[in-house]
Figure 1 (cartoon, one colour):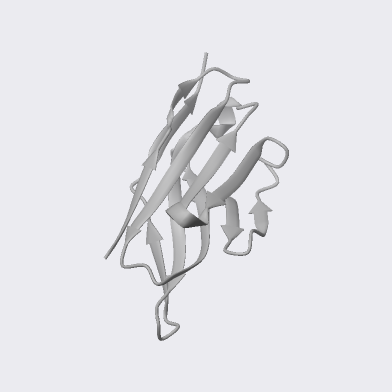
Figure 2 (cartoon, rainbow, N blue to C red; figure 1 turned 90 degrees about the vertical axis):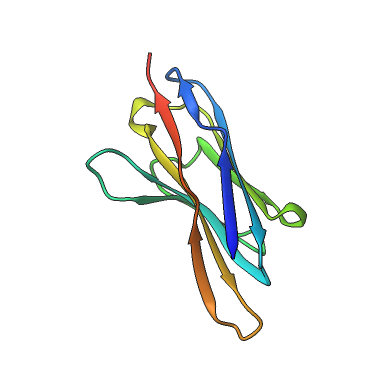
Length: 120
């Protein structure tokens, strides 16, 4: 069983910054990639940023230049540094873990989500 614990969400004014963290624990053999997705009210969940075990990153166009994803492999933790936040960044942010076991079977796990609200 795998657990993903997210933290760092909250209320911030436009132009402000927040840092999200997601720590993975449990029966993890190999992590292939970790990432962040978000879902705003009435909208589908969308990719924000991902990072592979080798450090390759991918960002949604809407956050390029403002958000930075990083990870600490030793701690199985992924971070999302968000700067120049806009009201349209308001959403529940979910951590996503892609992993595989000794037989190379792949699994995807999700965190419980953390609310980010950008408002005056």
